[in-house]
Image 1 (cartoon, one colour):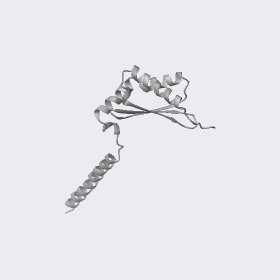
Image 2: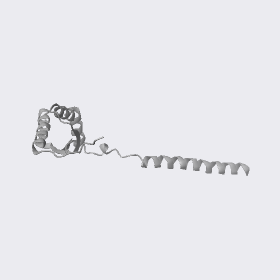
Image 3: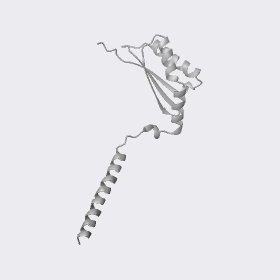
Amino acid sequence: MKRSKFIGIGVILMCIIIGTFVFYIQFNQSTELVDFNKIKPKEVKQLEEKLSETELMLEIGEKLYEKRYTFGLEWEVLSKEKVDIVVKLPKEEISEDTINEVKQIVNEVVTANNIEPQLFEIEVKNYPKVDN
């Protein structure tokens, strides 16, 4: 009788340990962050890779710097047919001439890299300078 009690208690303890282990694994899997790059369409990934390989944004930054612009540069591939580029300038107001010049610089770099300029939506924004 004593032996069967030990076996029963052992089985119950093993079930608790295994159940805790399985619950722990399931809990950790469900709380992992989703990598949105894994769920993007293949064409979007390819376009992102092409833009990264050509170092397009680096070249755009260099050209803007050569023209004496202080700027922030953001980009995002939204689809295989649309790439947003946002150039932020630290000015209170941006003239139409400045906007056109920045867009022209971006388009020149894009065409120099044999990429269709129609893919790009270029936005020039201002952000106020922060005085310390």
